Image: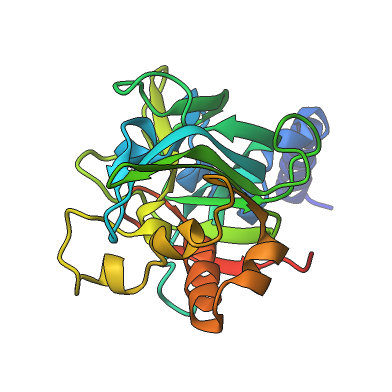
Length: 287
C-alpha cells in the first residue's frame, strides 16, 4: 500500500473514532422526537396561575323578576362540578359545530366540588373554585360534568335551589332539587372582557357560568324574547305550593307539571351551563 493510501485511511479512522465518542457521551434527551419538537412549538414551558370561577350572575346574587312576575331571591344555589379541565385547543373549539375538541394542552382543575353560587353579598365576585399552576398560553376551552353531591346540604343533588318567591303579597318558600347529571364541553369565554389568556408569572381565570334565567325567564325582557318563550317561569311551580311552601325533587316535578312544562324545564336544566355568554355542547349522563 502506498504512502498516500496509508495517510487517507489514518484520517478516516481518526474521524470515526472522534464521531463515535461524541455519540456515546450525548444524552438521549438531547435527541427529541418529532412529537416533542411539535409540542415545544405550541405549549409554553413557562407557567402562570390559572383560576376557575363559578358564576350564577346577578340573578343569583341580587335576585330577579321571572317572566311571569315573581320576585325570586335565592338563599342557596348549589351546583356540584366534577372532572373540570381547561384546554388550549387548536383549532379553537366551537360548541355549536359538529367537531371534537383537539387539545394541545390539558390542565385538570377540579375532581369534585359543590359550590353555592349565592354565597356572598349582592356585589360579591364569582366564586373562586380553585387555582393551579399551568403552562402559559390561551385557554380557550373548558369541560366539566355536573353530578350529584356526595355530602353536605345538597347531598344527592346536581342542582339545588333554595329561596323565596313573592308576587302580589303572596310569598312562597321553595326548595327545588335536580339529580340529573350532565356533561359539558365549552369553547372560549364570551363576555365584556377576555378570559383565559395566561401570561408567564401572571394569573388569569376561566368561568363556568350558570344561566338561571333559562329556567325562570326574565321579567325585564319582552314576553316574546327567546329567554322567555323557552323558560318555565315560576307560576307552574307556585301552583304546587302547600302552606306557602314548595319542596320538590326532579321526579316529583316531572309527575306534577304538565308534559309541556316538564319539557321546558328539562331543556332549561340541560342548557344551564355556559362560559359567560358562550355556549357549551351538553349531553345527559345516564343516572
